[in-house]
Image (cartoon, rainbow, N blue to C red; front, side, top):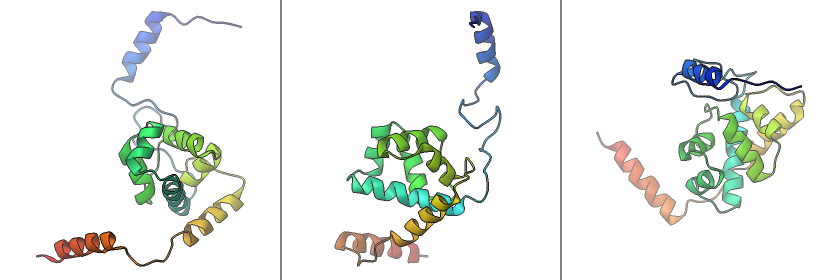
Length: 154
């Protein structure tokens, strides 16, 4: 079976879209994707996963973003903001780059529901145990001291 879509119809349909961004999971005019379940813990686990995988490959946030062709702020927000819901395209690019399941990354983000709850529990357990406990190095200590000094000023 085949069908033909006239060029004029395509142009008219594109004009109706206006300035709305086109993306999966959003209907025209929506500003945020609908969340499924309670993704807070999953988003924390997702951020930790991306952070550690990026560091494991010795990449800065900007280098990772450039490599997978997504906005630097998107990667920063995934790693640092536990309320940030990533774009579907970003999750796809991350899954391809890191060699993991896009479906499971979508589940961690709360954009899809999963029947396999065990991997969500495992992801949260992983995130909770992945932060090393070590003394700040000299550069980190200087940066922290500078920030504390700035925040302490009236």
